[in-house]
Image (cartoon, rainbow, N blue to C red):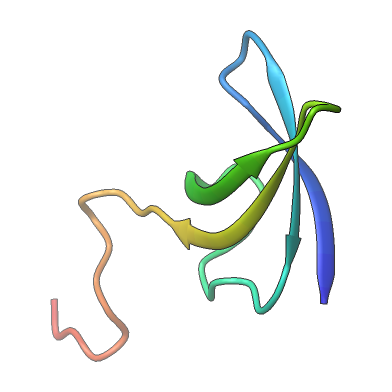
Length: 64
């Protein structure tokens, strides 16, 4: 599956293009780490996406 989306630092936006399976926690307003390269047309082609979570995240099997 191919997905195109924008990321922002609230100053500047960057278009990301990714083809592959999305991480389980991937959603709007979620922090990500994208690994890849930027093309001449200022589009970042990601080869890997990782989602970030806050310090309050607990796996589903957690008893907390």
